[in-house]
Amino acid sequence: MMLAPNSKTKTSERRITFHVDMDSFFASVEIRERPEIKGMPVVVGSDPKGGSGRGVVSTCSYEARKYGIHSAMPISQAYRLCPGAVFLPVNMKLYAGVSAGVMELLRSFSEKFQQVSVDEAYLIPGPEIRNFEEAALYALRIKDEVQRQQGITCSVGVGPNKLISKIASGFQKPDGLTVVRPEDVRDFLFPLPVSIIPGIGEKTTETLNEMGINRVEELSNCDIQLLSERFGKMGLKMKQLANGLDFEEVVEKEGVKSISRHGTFAEDTNDPVKISGSLDILIESVHGALLKHHFLFKTVTLTVRFEDFSTYTRSKTLSIWTSDIFVIKRTAMKLLSEFTGRRKFRLVGVGVTKFRERDEKQTLITDFP
Ligand SMILES: [Mg+2]
Image 1 (cartoon, rainbow, N blue to C red):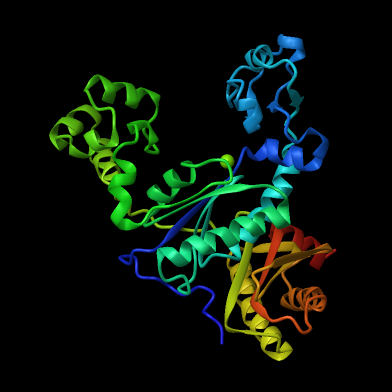
Image 2 (cartoon, rainbow, N blue to C red):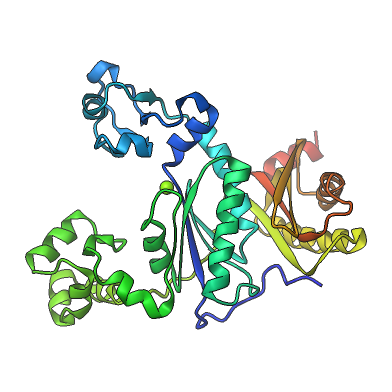
């Protein structure tokens, strides 16, 4: 028996939320591609042109940060700080490919998933993760699998909501894991500077500091009247966040890049009938979403997780665009055949990517040449 792929959770229910953030993502991918630069200061950005370049730093490795280099800094300044650093151009195509692999892997650990950017995502695991102790172990599994499959590190924050998990993931970078239990939220949050709260930028921080509000605790105690006068509606929101309260849901913006479904077996199994039966249910669900969005796909992805949590992803890109469910089934079964055997499955997942919207005009042309 499988968990329903989209089992609904009550909105009022507090859920253990994970925020996963790749460490200096672009630089880490470059280092993975060129092991010889590992341990060196690496700066990804525009051409420094011997110090006269006009662009900015996109990302830099932690070794480069030791020289005071940071993202968005003028590349000429980065060059002056460390002329011996390895300067590399932004290779977005490469990072996008790695990002897709990372996100697919993270999705396989989630019941609810929300990609935030190329290297950041929120996820809520299934109900098998019952408390923060289990969540901490689960986070370690996720970190291990990202490292093993993609060769790069990430930092994970675990908390009772998106706000806390997001701040927690940034708390011990790189390769960090920070778990904040509900009863520890205030102790965690209150000593931090107000600028730690997402949405409180440089300008707002300055205004708050002028009002004598420097730490989150001071903001949490601040008179709401005073905040409203100064910041309008944002004032209430700021006070709420400063108290560790965040009611935003983890919501997948589905259909943008991929549609996938995963299911964890109630009991690990190597029974091929059970496995392919479960895969069928997931494929039906993927196909339903595909039709709803009027998409054609070109790539089928299969994810398999064994009982020891080792996770494998395999993809096949077809030569044609289609929305045919039998193509998904045939391709997924072919990909699955590599894995069926004695090892027991913990999870199986299937997805489709590389979308094109169904073009009605083009269909007409094909139908009546
Ligand atoms: Mg990052």
